Length: 427
Image 1 (cartoon, rainbow, N blue to C red):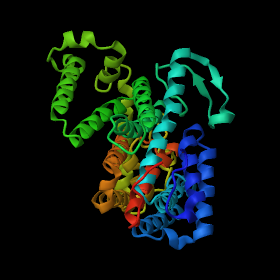
Image 2 (spheres, one colour; image 1 turned 90 degrees about the vertical axis):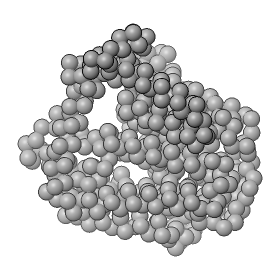
Image 3 (tube, rainbow, N blue to C red; image 1 turned 30 degrees about the vertical axis):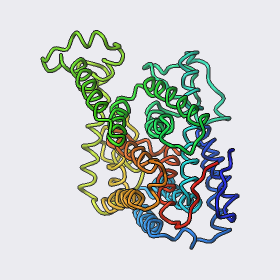
């Protein structure tokens, strides 16, 4: 059954609306955020702002005020105002989600719907790889604000519904830990058919994650696998994964450091080896992305040292670089989530951002109700942490659907800490 019942009948409409968004979120980065905005307005109109006035949500409010203040005094306030759209609406999304989701049954079902929805992303990605007709453009009016190629990109990568392959990888990086937990039967309250669907989402999502060619996501997916294995106390599996990683690293990078590994390297796909090796080998074309990142990070740190408190304004990074005649080598942003926040709204905003997320995770994990989520609270935390780790090498938070997924997870986790009464069943 799609609509899992909840105890609070006053929220039935909001809960059904939220589930619909969870299912169809991936198909549009324009319409689905708009539908979420309507839901937020509905909640505020029907229940009032006091309904979401919790300690964490008040912290979101004060952080929002600081970001607005830094926007007013920004290098370019108009551009910075646009940058607020990458943060403030999603703070409200987290608050609304935490108000609607109050029971373990809701929490589990909501996460399963997110896994179910991911099959559209991975299925479309596999279709792209199978057809491999880059000249065929999927109608952007239906799905996105940009054209979608029905094939591999020029550098042999798959992007599915998203505008960039790294965004697809970041999305799957958050979804796959949830899919693993459901597929392995760790959640006893779901049906066998739901478990089978999760297994399909896991298998297809893994394939597309590989096809995205995201080195960052490849590495973090292995870290996520180790985290899950640790949670499941599968020490032999951890040892095996560690050994496999060492062997792969030896095969890929052994020659670079005079450690051999040629035999292992010959067994690995050439594209996979070159993709990883190019991260550190200046002789390979892919090294340019590493060098360009180092270049923008250096400039970002310089800007932070000049305006450590108020920053320069959100999304003002390229404008400031142009005014200083600094060559960003074509990169459109800082390629680091934490540097972007510090450059945009100062170190106080960065500390507030990290503090609120840490507070949410800590409060959720230590809550008495967490044990009734059948492990999903811990797995959702792993998903959030994996996404935050992507922020060290890239900046994909500007994609609305990724932001929605992140704040959905955080909001639903925090929502369970707000209710003392909850249902033990799931439809």
